[in-house]
Length: 636
Image (cartoon, rainbow, N blue to C red; front, side):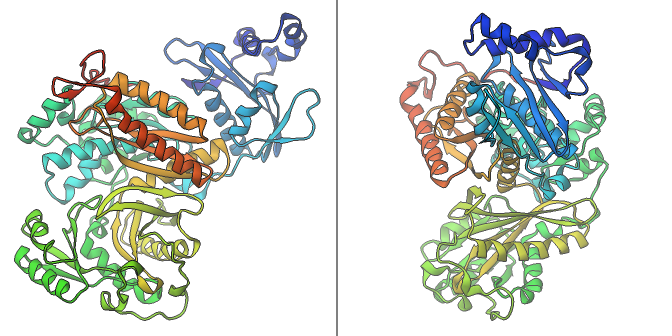
C-alpha cells in the first residue's frame, strides 16, 4: 500500500468509496442520500483539500482517502474513509499518520475532526481528544506533536534505507563463529526498525511473508521495499538442517558487499535518493552510501579504548566512577588477576576487547566460578576489571573503583534507591558533527547477557537519567572529534554512593535504539508519551512455520490491543529454530498495561507447547509438519 496525491479523474470513484465506507456503519438509504452532496468529492477541489489516496500497489485499487483542509496553524481533517473490506487492516491509521506528517511539515498546530460517531474511538486511540462544538457530529481535536530534533537529525527527511549489516559490522573486529553468524542474522531483523519510518530494508536473512505487512499495520507505515535473503548462509529453507551444517559453511559476504555485488539492486537503492542507515559502519556500507568514515573513527568500540576515555572524562563528572581495568596477555594472567580480586572480597569482570550483547563478558565473584569462566574465554589478550558493587552487594564503591571523590555538579547521593542496575544512554552524532541526546533506558540484563530494554516516562529515575545524559553527551563530543558519525550508546551499571559506572561504548544501532525509534513513531502517530519495551528473546513453546507464526502474531496483536498495548514483532526468523524464540517490542501509555502485555505475550508463547503436539521429534502444527515457507526475495 502506498499513499499518493488524488487525481481529478478519480473524483467519482473516490466519492463512491466514501459513500460505501459511510454505509458500512449501517446507515439507511435515506440517511446516505441526505449525506451524498456533503460527501461527494469534486474534481476541481483535489489540490485545495489536499486529498490523498491509499492505493494497493499491485492492483492500483483505491483503498482509502483522506484530506487535510484549511490554512496553518489551524486546519481540519475533512475526510478519512476506508474501503469497507479493508477496515481494520491499518489503512486508516496509515492515512491518519500521513495527514499528521503533512500537517507537521506545513506548520499546522491543530486539526479539528468532526467525526462519525462510530469513528470516535478510533481517533481517541490515536491521540485526539473530544472538544465542544461540531453540531450533530462529535468534534475532536488533535495537535500534531513536533518531530523530535534527534529524529530529524537521524533520518534527514521523512524516510530512510535500512541495512541489517550486523554480521558485517561484527566481523570487522574478529572472525565470527557459526553460532555468532546465525545470531547476527536473526538480530539483523531489528534493522527494519532502525528508523521511525523506513522506505526500504535490506536483510541477510529471509523473513516470513506477512511480517513487513504486520509492521506497516502496527506502525502506520506506507509501503516498504523489503530485500531479504542476501546472506548466503541464511537462505536454506530447512532450519534444522541449516543448524546442523552451518559449521561447515564458509562465512557469507557482508551485507553491504552483497548489495554492491548486485548492480541492479545498488542502482535501485541509490535511486530512492534517501539516506542509507547501516546497523553499523563498515567499509562497504560507506562505499554504498557515499559517506565513509575516516580511519580510526570506530576505535572506541574497543572496550579498553572506551575505558581510557571514561577515565579521562570522569574528573568533570563527580557522579561517575570508572572501574579500574587491566590487560591480561593470556588466560593464565587473567586467572591470577581475578583470583586476587576474589580473595580481596570484591570480585572481578573479565572481558574480550570486542563483543556484543554481553558476549565475551563474565562476572567472577567466587573461586568456584573462576574455572568455568576461564574455559569459556579465548586465549587472550583479555581485560580484567574490578566488579562494581551496587547497594545490594553492601560494598563500598571506593574499594572497587578508582576512588574518585565527589565534588561539585551532580550530587551522587541524590540518586533514589530504585535506580535499575543496568542503564544505557543513547545519542547520535549527525553528519555535521553535532551531538544529539536521545535518552536513557533501563536494560534487562541476565548475568551479563542483554535481554531487552525499556524507554519512556519513568523507565529511568530523573536524577540517574540526568547523570547518564550529561556523561553520554560528553562521550559524544569526543566521538565527533574522532570523526565518528552515527548512532552510539554508553552502557552503565549503578554503584554504591549513588554513582554510575560506564562500562562500554557501542558505535552502532542496538536493541534500546530500536525501542527509541518505535517510541518516536508511536508518539507521532498515536499521540501521548509511550513506554516501549524491547524483548529480544521470548522462548516459544513450539516451533512455528511461517504461516502459523504470522497467523498467531496477528491474533496476539489483537489481544494486546484489547488491553491498551501495541505489539510490534521485531525478530520473526527464529520461530522454527531447534530452540525457537521471538523478539517483540511492546508499547503502552501506562506501566501496568505494559507489564500486562509482557505477561500476556510470555504466557501465550509458552502456551504454544500445549496447542501444538510433538511430531517427528519437533513441535509441529496439529494438522501437519510443514516447514517454513520458501524465501520471499523481494517483497513490497
